[in-house]
Amino acid sequence: MHNQKDAYKQKVDAELRELEARTELLKAKGNNLLADAKVKFEEQVGELDKAKSEFASYYDQLAEKADDTWDDVKDEAEDKWNKFASSVSSFISKHT
Image 1 (cartoon, rainbow, N blue to C red):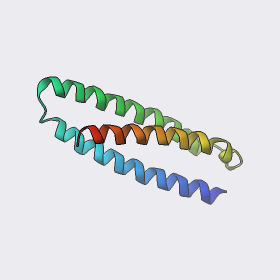
Image 2: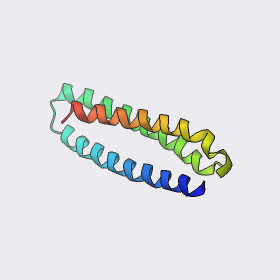
Image 3: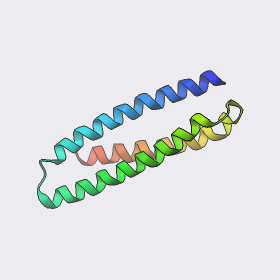
């Protein structure tokens, strides 16, 4: 059970680093936008940062969960991850 938890955490960590890198690249591209578009872009980036913070807070709590409760929280963690990843993908598709 512990191996599944570690493997899941490693997968999410890697994907989170990749999404953060892609978001940072988009932030750099956003610097070239016109003023009005830039304001909207920055609002969307703020929403992504907030979603990332909310996910990260929940994700940090996962590390504290005992192995015997892992199955109970895994589905919720997967749902939160999918929502966050979907938000990032949607954002990226709008700006690339």
